[in-house]
Length: 132
Length: 299
Image 1: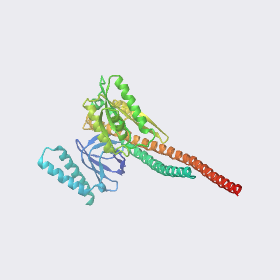
Image 2: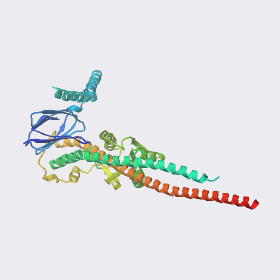
Image 3: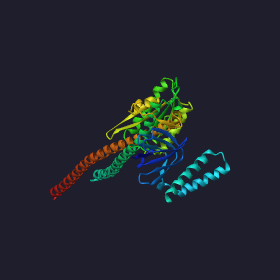
Image 4: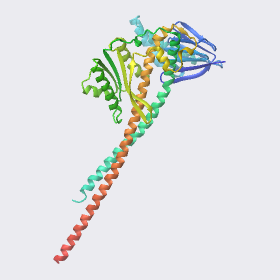
């Protein structure tokens, strides 16, 4: 038994795959899905999504917002911005992280910069995750 | 001087011929664009379907239906019109029919004492309404040809912002719906307030009761709070994609007609030119014969 995972962005279906387990972070914390999970809908936070494949491979995806809908053995991740590790521009993400950090030093309450930093960090961890 | 008319005609034929080349090229480009636009509309469908399906889940769970985007005003004082036109012309009746429908809608609203607020997509619509001194509240350019999701989000922020702040009590969307390659028609739809979530769920096809009991994180209302803006964006995005496909289909048809007309014109002008040449030759022969005759009788 395995999960049918679908990663859907507004413009296209980014990825369809099968997995033994999917780990995401919702507003209430980390949650993992395995086949037979109760039907579930959750709001996602900017964080990497981990997809544990049937063959033991782990795939990381940077998801910046969206939803996860689980019903039966289907997991659908709906996200405005979902990037596979290979699509991430690490130089750009590093630069964005630097910029956001600088903005935070000047104004620690800058929520936009904090969000930008978080996004950049997620991108970088996802990109680094596959290099290892 | 003989041959003058012929030369003028020859020049016109070559000018029509080069126009024909251009319209033919535009026809072919539009044809590939329609296919691309259709594919993009097709690729965008899974997301829209999923969003609707989550709304179905929420309706089944009995989520609170209190949300700014669902607010029904008792009295409608001001109506926002979102009019989607193209940036470029030469698309046959595409822009004019959308604009005409929008203007009619505005007139009808004004007669009932409702103010209007215009949010325009596309340079053609903006030019039209600006020329006629309508008050334009926002206009967007460069997104009607190949709309991106980010464009839909910008548009949605503008539209939802005005609705949530109470500046407008209703939003009507005017665009050209793509039914098939051969048929597109102007659609005038109430866009905001959204139908109740039960109605949205019913549109999705599945009956809300038949669905399994879901768990929601953080809560059904919390999910709804985040979901509805996305739903608005995805609806606008699909309207933009539809409009783009319609634009290209209309342009293809208009350019096909123009190419056919050019061909007809070339045939007609060629006939006229041949007749003019014949006439010139006949006249010349007559002159020579006449001259020879005069010389002989003189000798």
